[in-house]
Length: 231
Ligand SMILES: [Zn+2]
Image (cartoon, rainbow, N blue to C red):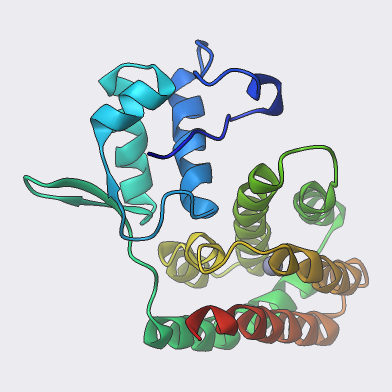
């Protein structure tokens, strides 16, 4: 039986998700968090009835959340069987993913640096800033929120690079959701912060060469941090 991670720290005391207009969103966030911190293990069966009991909500928001997570590649629906957490990516897929990232992201970071302006820089600083906020939030919540923000940070850089196809190709992989599920470890988030800062510095300077280099280093180090997950 999995236990819920409340969608916001103020609800830590109560097990049930508070009723609000954002109920569907809260249920989605709670299940998302459990998937990201491996509370629901990759490949594990997800039973709608169990989640209904656990969160004390009706079937509707649970099904809605699972449908959304299915679209994000985190949940797989099997005919007549039900839902499962998506399996862990394989080592082969991991290598392919990082090869693809290394081909596309440094190039795009260079283009984004060349096209940088104050408004774009503010968007990237905000995304990076949310990740570095070290408050009292539950460490598991921080981890899953980091995964989402890191995805947004990289997606924004791809958007600013101005090649929609590159952006779509990477977005379609849901890279950050999959790589952050390889392990739940502080190192994954802490070290990335410095690498993001190097990227922000290059963007602030409008330095395409430095941005390409900073992105290449970030992706290579990210790969090296996660490789032990396959040992
Ligand atoms: Zn990153």
